[in-house]
Image (cartoon, rainbow, N blue to C red):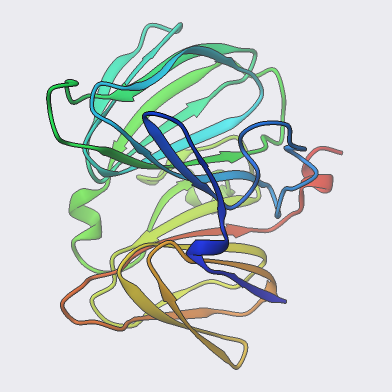
Length: 250
């Protein structure tokens, strides 16, 4: 099954300083796990005004990944981490038994640089683990144009440059393709086009995606992603998931 969700149809929420477009309901009253696809329970495209951000708040038993597209985000947490993540950097937070953190646009209120991040939540395969935070820079690796495994809990990626997550069924690939690239099929997949436009071929179907479009896949074969415009290099985030939420949490 292949479902394309155009950018205009993704859930939208905004306040005075934040604009959020979401693959799954992530604000207000929502069923976090009832709306999951595979093990992915949140996938937000957030734009934050200079000097603004979320004050200290608490998380528990969730794998939280933040991918920086524009600007820089400053992260502070109760474990003692204070760091600023720039473009091409992945922030990985395993909330485990509990962690309190804040995140904000590193630019001052007097500045003009908006922060744009993709924040993703994945259900862990085990609760009550020690909380952890780490940052991983993939800017150089992505310059090749080939897909990069940036986060994974699958055994075959242990010991690699990928940020480790506590879900043995999930892998996050990111690519800035210069020409056609191939991404693996899986029982569950979620592809998001963060920039540019691209053609996606999968299971005999062809879809042209533009910035902000998402694709939800079930039991799909390999995906071939090809840039449409030579002057606008796309940026693709793809979750490869080998279990559904029910199996992980059983």
